[in-house]
Image (cartoon, rainbow, N blue to C red; front, side, top):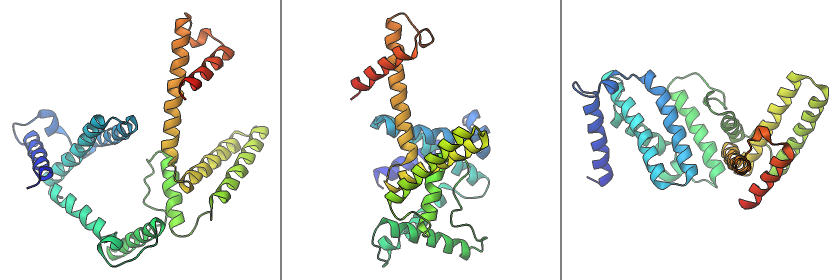
Amino acid sequence: MSAATDSLQRLLDIMDKLRDPGGCPWDREQTLRTLTPYLLEEAHEVIEAIESGDAEHHKEELGDLLFQIVFQSRIAREEGKFDFAQVCDAIAEKLTRRHPHVFGDVSVSGSKEVVKNWERIKADERKEKGLEKRSAIGGVPDGLPALVRAERLTEKAGAVGFDWPDVKSVMAKVYEELHELENALESGNRNELESELGDLLFALANLGRHVKVHPEEALRATLRKFTARFGYIEEKLAERGKTPRESDLAEMDALWNEAKLSSK
């Protein structure tokens, strides 16, 4: 067996020992429902590890996420639903089926055609299973971060031809929504303001997709930058015996500009 196979079997054996009689009381008490928050937490920690650029941290967090999959598979096996091997087989079969340009004789001109084929194959699969016909933009979880969901929804819409033809067209929409937001600000109507702000954010998410910049990742990068620069302000103010509340905008703005220069 390969090293990966040996390592995976070791993990599965550990999981069995934790859940079997005489194992860990906490692990034995868990259910699919109680594990849900941990699954979400581990997924977000993987993202943070990727952003940190720390390979060791990334490796560790991927392991934590993998353990959640192994854990749920073990519980499902106990309930007579499926086991880990079936999870692996299911995704292997799906990937093979949905990549006919790799595992079959289908030719594609690029990634856009790959996405279109993927969505078509998904629709065919649902039809074969006798499942209810779903919207072309269906299947995007409501619980996703809003920018991620906006990107995925427009990606699905684009796969069936409902999309802006080019980046210039998307930019024109951004400017249009910005102008409408300005009008809403002048009107003072809160509902209108919320609606127009949402439209602008949606247009920006669409722009990110067109220029191949994930809006969620772009915003997260900006938040890290903001956090670091504000931390610089607090540090420098502390050296002067102050807190931000004891400072003023002019002083903090000057320190912000220093932080910008120092981070270049």
